[in-house]
Length: 128
Image (tube, rainbow, N blue to C red; front, side):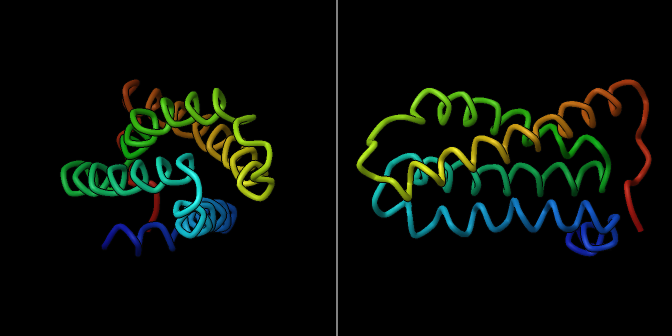
């Protein structure tokens, strides 16, 4: 199975959550032309996709995939948190950054748990 096929075979709530994260990244693209915070998000998203693809090809659809988010999204979250109140005149981008902080934080809770479970021996394929 491809990574996308595995993702679509995940429980409904996981598919919905991945859709929310995907929407976050899609919205970041046009905002990246006006603000450096979404621009950083898009760059991190692209790096994350390449790294996660490598993890998938090496380990399959296992909990270690969360390592990609842990590595790249943890500093992104810190950066967004630190800059969340910059440029208050950019209201739409400011709202977007605050939503991104919440979504990334929630995602990282799952990702850290997945990586810990993988390190502790849970190496099973997660779907399909």
